[in-house]
Image (cartoon, rainbow, N blue to C red; front, side, top):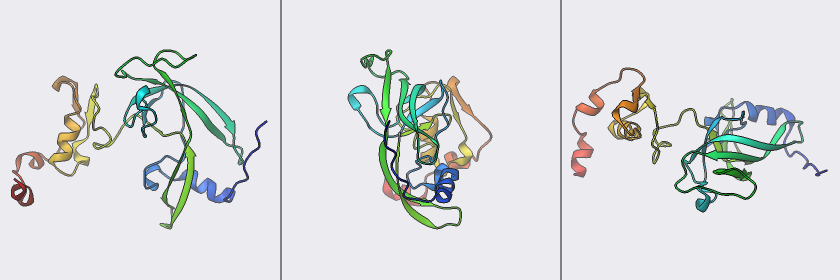
Length: 196
């Protein structure tokens, strides 16, 4: 049986940190991952480029191994991800084709608490996010089918281009609602005109 590390924070503060939204962490590291088999995920860090375990790579949860933490919570030790269309087939011994193991990694960063106080935290966690949605910037380098976009959340024509260019075809592009067409038809801004 493994020895458990003693917690360095109170149970109350730990509970508060678990309840924060992902955006409360400066690098958007989620405080809790709710998993199920088949959950779409996006890898957040270049772990092993030779195995296509790279930032932005999409996949689905295949399985996991977990243990119990110092507060009685489940701690993810290894997450097995079935990669979506890796550039080359990936063969890891004793695992099915294109299934790769991901282990925990330390991440440091600032977290903004509910009372707007900022504290520095170090988390040891697996670098994935649920892959149901992503920002226009997180989608760079992705080809999405379908590519559902909400153009109202994007600030300018650059961001709109990034989001829309993730589609492989016009038929696979879904614009979720109306949008302000002036962002793409109003001409270049003054600073942009000076740049060219």
